[in-house]
Amino acid sequence: MADAESEWLSLRAWTLATVDITLFVILALVGIHAVGGLDDLLAGLSTLVGVAAFLGLWALFVLAVRWVLADASLAESSLWTLAKRGLVAGSVAGLVTLLVLALVVVVPLVLVGPAEPLSGLLFTAIATPFAAVVGALVGLFFGAVDVALYRASGYALPAVVDERRGTPTTPDRP
Image (cartoon, rainbow, N blue to C red; front, side):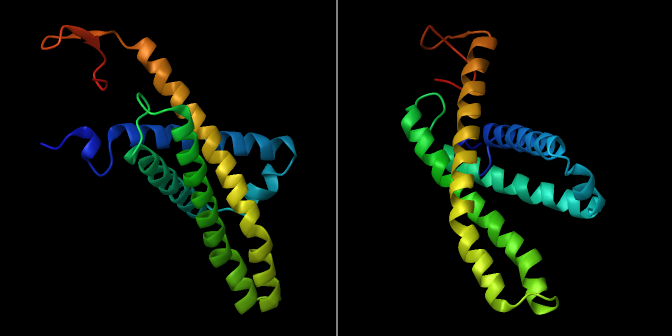
């Protein structure tokens, strides 16, 4: 049986990504509602599009968290290491999100709709650095949330004494 950390997708990565995407969607919806745009947004979405968007974002979050945890440990890595990896993973996720939006929204407007090809390229060129920066900030924020949740769970879980070492540990920490 493989070690939990060497599996392609550990329960820790899956759980953190699921908490992150849920919090992300809640914060986004509350923010959109606060500026009065939720009615217009929901009127233009079908259930299928909403579920597809959520699953796509969730997959990005899972891959990002998995990448961060591949060479870093929430228990043992420095905050600086986790912050750097969170910034990079978030930036890449932001760029992938922009790419998907460009393919789903901009390309059809250029091919079928009223938009000119140059406007699609201009939109993508202008939006790319913004997507990278916003994604990096989102990655940094959720990295901090993940570290805080992980460390809080260490206080909430009972200490288990390792019979071989005689030291208290939690189930996922040596």
